[in-house]
View 1 (tube, rainbow, N blue to C red):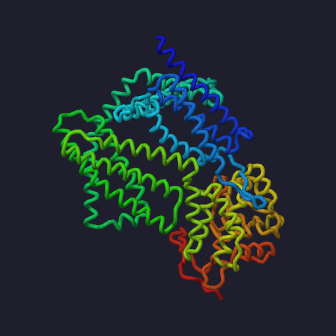
View 2: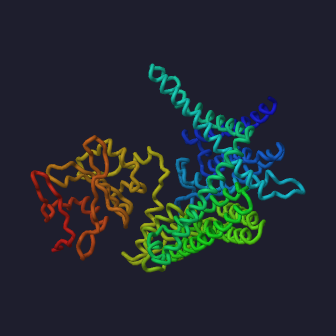
View 3: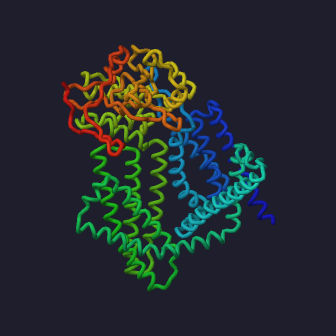
Length: 598
């Protein structure tokens, strides 16, 4: 079968390229090969590895030469987006400059979520590029059919891959029963499992392309099932909106996550509607009845989109913009366009046969999604840059949570957040003022080198002073503290501003020995944690020290406790409240009233 050989060879050629690049990236990450593991190199290569085959698979409607050109163009676009993302991941301060952090491919959130979002845009764009021919327009029907075929193609290939590994793992378990471990050992080898998985997936794609009748059948059946589910969804959405007439929307908005749930429900309704319309081939009377159902659904979805937008506006007004809220606003805008378009389509269906609003709405919504995602991931409308500017504009608000602001800048702001932290760290203010606390928090955040190697962090732990002086830190606790975030930026110099120490103490006569990692400049944040050895021989957190106290007098800070531990001026006294004993079993009591400070 020449057709089979040609189709299969093309897909295996593309799959081989992806397999080599995927295995190379994995090994580079495992061996920490620089510069391959630098964000500005790794993320573009990851995007290239992912989207060159993706484009080739989803452009199967195009002629071979045009299909290759589309694949190369999409790969370059994805690599450019990856380069921008790699250049704008979080940095750290060094001599007043912002440098690339000691980034690691283990920071999956830096490239997996952008890849998923970019994949959605390219999934919508590729069929239009593949179907476009000189002098011919891409019809809505052909574009929607290509979208469904591509979705079925990818799902069938994933199913083939899943079944392949199910067979392989089952065979490995069977051989293991008779003492033959060669297959399990082979599966655990990355040079075997990674390329093989990619090649099996590419072969699954070639099978789906050759037997596209299966995809057409599944699309038709899915559409008919959605035609049954959509009226049910409309009934529920109408009932939900009518309930607002009785109790208002205050209860809904008070949940704090109303926008997410509303946008998800609207998206699900629109997906059911689109699939139902695509499969609609009944008589005219049935289409007219479905038009009334569509009209009711669109009328119920409009207030949901409006309330979701209002809820997002309230959150932005209270807490400022974040990347998640910017993406939610974008989704809300796209859904509003779609709901309005489908409302016009439903009005035309119930009044007269034939309506262009369905294809017009789908086309404009898809163009808005593709353009918006490329602008937001490619730089001009970067949500991180916009949200950092929004958060910095809130500095004058008296009720601003400084710790939350600094956490956002360090965790979600990327390079833009690091620049903002540098600005905050340079500010000066009266001791105890909001400006001084914010500057201390920013300096502390800039000192956290989360990408440091395990050996370097272990060396920090081993070099920290331990009190009392004759105490040796257990090896198991050293290894546990390496993963503790407070360790980042610690100095063994007891006179330094960021000095840290480890303090051994025993808070009860017959209780376990506990250890406390104390940082002098811990301006705010979580209370210092007590570490203890559990009954199963594992080190874990067994409590904390509350530095805020229970009195109205001046609170004791981390610096005062730090200096007292160094000077040996800390003593232990029993708590004034008593526990209860019932039949030999102790019941602990906690008193909420403040203790006498005298």
